[in-house]
Image 1: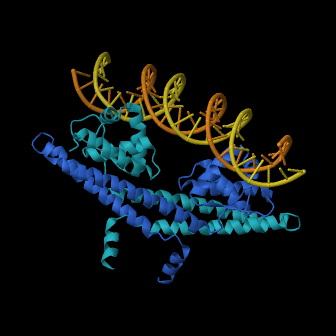
Image 2: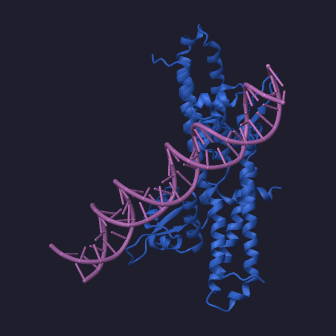
Length: 176
Length: 176
DNA sequence: TTTTTCATACAGTTTAAACTGAACAAACTT
DNA sequence: AAGTTTGTTCAGTTTAAACTGTATGAAAAA
């Protein structure tokens, strides 16, 4: 039988789990940081993370800030301790889905608005193009813009439909 | 009234649309390439793309290959033409959702399998840890592994629920 | 108050990604 | 067959991202 020690296994799990975290748009470093934080389970200090990842404290500081902004990690206060402690939330699915959905819906919505503004602007300037060789190009652009805006609307809806709680999925299972 | 020419507006739309495409994990260059391809509407050659983006033909070649692999772009054959032509599919939503869902479900599934293998391996070596100080660590790891695997299962399901056709969304609208 | 301990800003360095031009190979033209 | 045209490979370069160490400031300890 192959024999691994727990450290090796920890390493294997971290590497594998980090890959999934990367899917959510995090960099390899950020993903690995989160993976370790989650696997360790107990809150860690910047120095401990630095030690665990073999990277500078500065890197940990910036990395943890990203994770904080995404709300994937939280700072915990410990009595009598001066250092900051951070821990990864237990509920992986809820946290990731919330962060992910929020980020996407938000971006899709903003980009849609921008395109709508461009469309308005284009239509306002319609006369400038209507009597020239640009007429056909104008029509095509207008057409494409409408398709893009529809695309963004569909994206928003699709991502909003993903419920950030696991319970919803279980409910649906029962309905089958 | 502000006056833009069509070229400026084209530029605006391209830039804005590319941002959305980037959300799907494409690099800024790839996203911009797709945006132009979509906006132009007609199939383009590598040289035309190179001209339109102000980048080398080599870049276009590698960029278009990525888009092809994601199935976001297709090669079209033109009678009497020696050059390759490429066009972006009309149906944005369907294409992007298909590509996206496939990529994600696939990755989630693979990573889940890896974690399951590690879990099996861990349990097989359980005796090695049961009588040592590692016992508690072993339990924690095992626990974490189970949570991760569940997380991956939920991810798979959640992404599979996103239908890659807009019609589904319309149907749901009617049911309200 | 002075000293220590911590997190973060910043400038400089290292590392990785994107990009380019020359060379090549395959397909076509003459 | 010889010469073009076209897409891709590859080595080298440029550009951008990641990372580090020193410096700074804030908070706690002495």
